[in-house]
Length: 396
Image 1: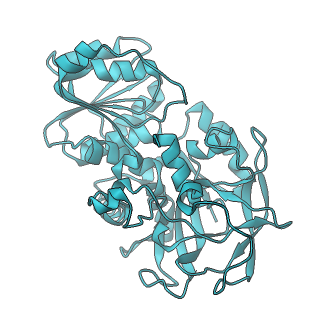
Image 2: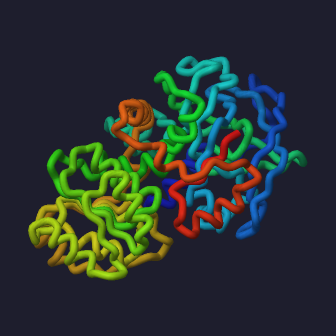
Image 3: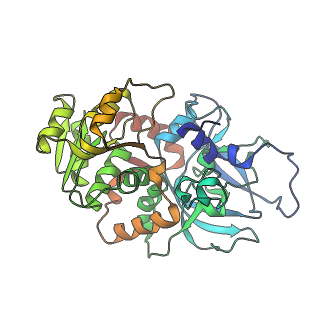
């Protein structure tokens, strides 16, 4: 079976990982007790989302019930609303979260009630072909909760990326909880929760997929949340020339605040020529396409140095194509990669990024543009489309 990023995201929703649908009979050893909580649900394609009451079961084997503290409003959530990930409505939205463990299944030992965690959508299985090769960051059978959360009428919900944390509480696989032992204040929960998806995708695209070396040059095309995180990752990793490219001067200014040494407004100048000029005429060692459309990928391909690397972290719309000249692929050398979740291994990367944040080397607070309530998510989607924010964060 051919697999791609969209198929990979379906793994993260749990449909592929759980296998065929089974009877709704609750297995022996799984509690039928339900918690009634407020949550944001997408009931139908392209319709405004609804704040409603849902049922969340007590955790069974391998599961954890968490009290959600914060949840970032991510573009992926809007992809669910628009039907871009699937049509398994109703969707329980939200996935970029800090939370506190409330209860765990009897067999869970890695986390305990009271633990502060960042939720992730890569709870590795340890058994698939990627895990057996020692490449758990690519796990093809990530775990999600077995039990279903439901609307009050019993309609089963599909949690976004297997998490569904625009909710006062949610049920996840225990492996989706990355324990954070550092001393974190309540005001910092919003910042660290963003490591659950977009910020880590950008950081990882540079540090993991792009394998940045100290002293290299980096260009990032597209300075939304993920692209700005890639800028921050370039600074964290020791790049000395960091070029931010966008068509919005406000976004470029935010990129400077996160470490960009140069900015290029590609609506006014040719970005390829500008990047070459800023790198001695050669092109950047590493170019990140954080947009994912044909024109920006072409720019990334052409703006790298000989033997340079291109990383695609912006998620393309299905069917997006670009005719690539193979002689140019051969002649330029280097590599072209895509970054799935920034090739992140949450158990390894989340605690490290939190430590860098606490040391003042990674400005996660700069990604929190506004703090909102569950009832404000529809408005936050509209604000997101304007590009005025990096992240709106729901606080519960």
